[in-house]
Image (cartoon, rainbow, N blue to C red; front, side):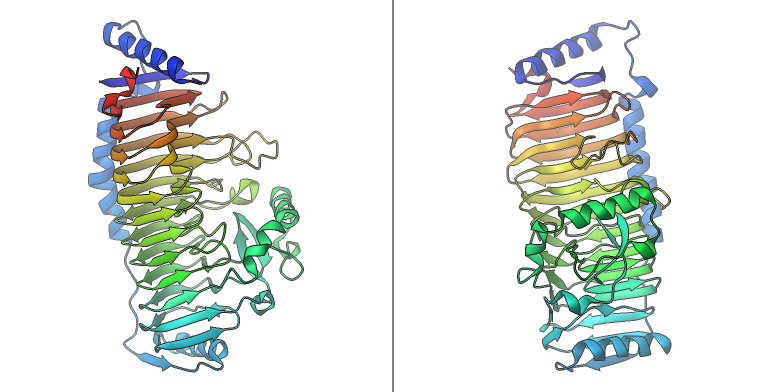
Length: 474
């Protein structure tokens, strides 16, 4: 049965009410033509036309724009295990200045006492057996650099591998990058709150970047790999683990390929891949096993994010995603510049005690999340929520900049169990959530199939719990 639900301005809080309300809606749609039509002419014909255009036309055009960089056919070997960081940064500068090439780090154990700074036209290749052990000493990541921390620009400790304003960059090979977050960085989670609040307020107040200085004496952890304002990026084949904060975080960057990586968990907030205010991104064939979100699309936080471009044209396919808390895949909560044209297909989600899919913001954010296409996904372990849309995510500071949610299309998704709610959609009275389409979605079991608040229109087409359509749950 196809259910089209329009204008739900209050929450359905328990199974009995949910079942009753859905039955009434279904019967009304089937027997009545008294003007009870979806807003925006949202119906199954509209939805299927959008889906067909997106997958058959929009996605191929995006792929045409994602082209991995190529490099000058010159290779430089490095095997200096005593002064590795100085040697590698000096060589990167020299190779970039002379037209580029590949720097190949040979097999061996390397201690890296501080950041590696990537430059244009350099492929940094880690041979199989090369293990980079990054120092856990925070002072090794000084002086501070321009960075973004949870969506706010500040000056802070440099990420482990960092670039700003470069193009044609690659990190490749079957080596291992180890951030050793457990030695010092992990303890900073309990100490970061005053600095976090201060940074966010600076963003809100538009304090000049030169005055947003953290680093020594503060407790905001650096990212693993962070490229800012870069073009033509390839990250391929290596293993990266135990980074202090978000693992891979391209910001204001474009033409990015993340392929065949293994990302292993460290501490809290170790998101796997977080494209932020970036476009034309392909994430494929990766094994991501994190404590926090596996893949999270970001676009800046609150007023500090608004002047920048949205995240758009992002394709995520053929990945295995495992997490402890958080989500297998999410958008937000830092998404103030907006997120659109995201394609997520043929992925397997494992583990995680919270969400398979989460779309999150709050009234500080503004912005939009729209044109999201998800298909052919299996969630093979229990989660608390199958799908959650939330507009009151934690940390709200009292503003009234409501996020626009629109045009989400889910097809061919299987989940073994949603332990609390299968589908939870929470909009706002001032800005309801619009145009949600689910087709061929099956849950093995869930005590609460469907819970909504301020949802303007949704279509459920063959959406079942225990092989029973949601509209017929008893």
